[in-house]
Length: 159
Image (cartoon, rainbow, N blue to C red):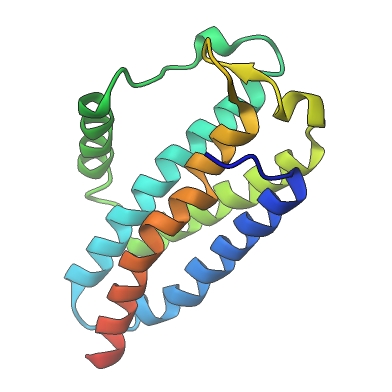
Protein backbone atom coordinates (compact mmCIF):
# COMPACT_ATOMS: atom_id res chain seq x y z
CA UNK A 1 0.00 0.00 0.00
CA UNK A 2 1.16 3.45 -0.84
CA UNK A 3 1.31 6.35 1.55
CA UNK A 4 1.90 8.85 -1.24
CA UNK A 5 0.94 12.48 -0.93
CA UNK A 6 -2.19 13.79 -2.58
CA UNK A 7 -0.05 15.49 -5.22
CA UNK A 8 1.89 12.29 -5.97
CA UNK A 9 -1.36 10.32 -6.21
CA UNK A 10 -2.86 12.84 -8.64
CA UNK A 11 0.29 12.78 -10.77
CA UNK A 12 0.27 8.97 -10.86
CA UNK A 13 -3.43 8.88 -11.78
CA UNK A 14 -2.89 11.41 -14.57
CA UNK A 15 -0.01 9.31 -15.88
CA UNK A 16 -2.22 6.21 -15.94
CA UNK A 17 -4.97 8.11 -17.75
CA UNK A 18 -2.54 9.37 -20.38
CA UNK A 19 -1.04 5.92 -20.85
CA UNK A 20 -4.41 4.21 -21.33
CA UNK A 21 -5.55 6.90 -23.75
CA UNK A 22 -2.26 6.59 -25.67
CA UNK A 23 -2.72 2.82 -25.95
CA UNK A 24 -6.35 3.18 -27.02
CA UNK A 25 -5.47 4.14 -30.59
CA UNK A 26 -3.36 1.03 -31.08
CA UNK A 27 -5.96 -1.27 -29.52
CA UNK A 28 -8.76 0.21 -31.64
CA UNK A 29 -6.66 -0.03 -34.78
CA UNK A 30 -6.81 -3.79 -34.90
CA UNK A 31 -8.95 -5.85 -37.20
CA UNK A 32 -9.57 -8.59 -34.64
CA UNK A 33 -12.55 -8.01 -32.33
CA UNK A 34 -11.05 -10.33 -29.72
CA UNK A 35 -8.40 -7.70 -28.95
CA UNK A 36 -10.98 -5.01 -28.33
CA UNK A 37 -13.00 -7.46 -26.21
CA UNK A 38 -9.95 -8.25 -24.09
CA UNK A 39 -9.15 -4.56 -23.67
CA UNK A 40 -12.81 -3.87 -22.83
CA UNK A 41 -12.75 -6.53 -20.12
CA UNK A 42 -9.62 -5.00 -18.58
CA UNK A 43 -11.03 -1.46 -18.59
CA UNK A 44 -14.43 -2.57 -17.26
CA UNK A 45 -12.60 -4.28 -14.40
CA UNK A 46 -10.48 -1.18 -13.72
CA UNK A 47 -13.58 1.03 -13.87
CA UNK A 48 -15.43 -1.10 -11.32
CA UNK A 49 -12.67 -0.64 -8.73
CA UNK A 50 -12.24 3.04 -9.64
CA UNK A 51 -15.95 3.61 -8.98
CA UNK A 52 -15.57 1.94 -5.58
CA UNK A 53 -12.79 4.43 -4.76
CA UNK A 54 -15.17 7.27 -5.52
CA UNK A 55 -17.62 5.71 -3.07
CA UNK A 56 -14.88 5.64 -0.42
CA UNK A 57 -13.93 9.24 -1.18
CA UNK A 58 -17.54 10.38 -0.87
CA UNK A 59 -18.84 8.27 2.03
CA UNK A 60 -15.91 8.16 4.47
CA UNK A 61 -15.73 11.96 4.93
CA UNK A 62 -19.46 11.94 5.69
CA UNK A 63 -19.02 9.22 8.31
CA UNK A 64 -21.00 6.76 6.17
CA UNK A 65 -18.36 4.09 5.67
CA UNK A 66 -20.77 1.45 6.96
CA UNK A 67 -22.55 1.81 3.58
CA UNK A 68 -19.46 0.54 1.76
CA UNK A 69 -19.36 -3.10 0.75
CA UNK A 70 -16.01 -4.85 1.19
CA UNK A 71 -15.10 -8.25 -0.16
CA UNK A 72 -14.48 -10.73 2.64
CA UNK A 73 -11.65 -12.60 0.92
CA UNK A 74 -9.92 -13.34 -2.40
CA UNK A 75 -12.73 -15.67 -3.47
CA UNK A 76 -15.25 -12.85 -3.13
CA UNK A 77 -12.97 -10.46 -5.04
CA UNK A 78 -12.76 -13.06 -7.83
CA UNK A 79 -16.56 -13.40 -7.83
CA UNK A 80 -16.99 -9.62 -8.11
CA UNK A 81 -14.48 -9.49 -10.96
CA UNK A 82 -16.27 -12.33 -12.81
CA UNK A 83 -19.60 -10.53 -12.40
CA UNK A 84 -18.12 -7.34 -13.85
CA UNK A 85 -16.83 -9.24 -16.87
CA UNK A 86 -20.22 -10.90 -17.48
CA UNK A 87 -22.11 -7.63 -17.08
CA UNK A 88 -19.92 -5.85 -19.63
CA UNK A 89 -20.05 -8.40 -22.45
CA UNK A 90 -22.30 -6.17 -24.57
CA UNK A 91 -20.25 -3.04 -23.95
CA UNK A 92 -17.97 -1.77 -26.71
CA UNK A 93 -14.28 -1.06 -26.19
CA UNK A 94 -14.96 2.62 -26.91
CA UNK A 95 -17.70 2.81 -24.29
CA UNK A 96 -15.53 1.08 -21.68
CA UNK A 97 -12.71 3.50 -22.45
CA UNK A 98 -14.96 6.56 -22.13
CA UNK A 99 -16.49 5.28 -18.89
CA UNK A 100 -13.12 4.54 -17.27
CA UNK A 101 -11.61 7.83 -18.51
CA UNK A 102 -14.56 9.81 -17.14
CA UNK A 103 -14.28 8.02 -13.79
CA UNK A 104 -10.54 8.71 -13.63
CA UNK A 105 -11.03 12.41 -14.36
CA UNK A 106 -13.72 12.59 -11.68
CA UNK A 107 -11.49 10.79 -9.18
CA UNK A 108 -8.64 13.22 -9.86
CA UNK A 109 -10.93 16.24 -9.52
CA UNK A 110 -12.48 15.03 -6.27
CA UNK A 111 -9.12 14.00 -4.82
CA UNK A 112 -7.72 17.47 -5.54
CA UNK A 113 -10.53 18.94 -3.42
CA UNK A 114 -10.12 16.55 -0.46
CA UNK A 115 -8.71 17.68 2.84
CA UNK A 116 -5.46 15.98 3.92
CA UNK A 117 -7.06 15.02 7.23
CA UNK A 118 -9.61 12.89 5.36
CA UNK A 119 -6.94 11.21 3.25
CA UNK A 120 -4.98 10.11 6.32
CA UNK A 121 -8.09 8.88 8.12
CA UNK A 122 -8.17 5.19 8.93
CA UNK A 123 -11.25 3.20 8.13
CA UNK A 124 -12.49 -0.36 7.74
CA UNK A 125 -11.70 -1.00 11.39
CA UNK A 126 -7.93 -0.86 10.96
CA UNK A 127 -5.08 1.42 10.04
CA UNK A 128 -6.05 1.41 6.38
CA UNK A 129 -6.26 5.00 5.19
CA UNK A 130 -8.34 6.62 2.50
CA UNK A 131 -5.21 7.52 0.50
CA UNK A 132 -4.06 3.89 0.67
CA UNK A 133 -7.42 2.75 -0.73
CA UNK A 134 -7.19 5.37 -3.49
CA UNK A 135 -3.70 4.15 -4.39
CA UNK A 136 -4.68 0.47 -4.37
CA UNK A 137 -7.68 0.89 -6.65
CA UNK A 138 -6.32 3.54 -9.03
CA UNK A 139 -2.68 4.00 -9.94
CA UNK A 140 -1.39 0.83 -8.28
CA UNK A 141 -4.17 -1.02 -10.07
CA UNK A 142 -3.08 0.66 -13.33
CA UNK A 143 0.38 -0.84 -12.91
CA UNK A 144 -1.18 -4.28 -12.59
CA UNK A 145 -3.18 -3.99 -15.83
CA UNK A 146 -1.22 -1.61 -18.08
CA UNK A 147 1.14 -4.41 -19.17
CA UNK A 148 -1.89 -6.33 -20.45
CA UNK A 149 -3.11 -3.32 -22.43
CA UNK A 150 0.40 -2.72 -23.76
CA UNK A 151 0.56 -6.32 -24.93
CA UNK A 152 -2.78 -5.94 -26.72
CA UNK A 153 -1.60 -2.70 -28.33
CA UNK A 154 1.62 -4.40 -29.40
CA UNK A 155 -0.29 -7.27 -30.93
CA UNK A 156 -2.38 -4.81 -32.89
CA UNK A 157 0.72 -2.96 -34.10
CA UNK A 158 2.22 -6.24 -35.32
CA UNK A 159 -1.08 -7.20 -36.95
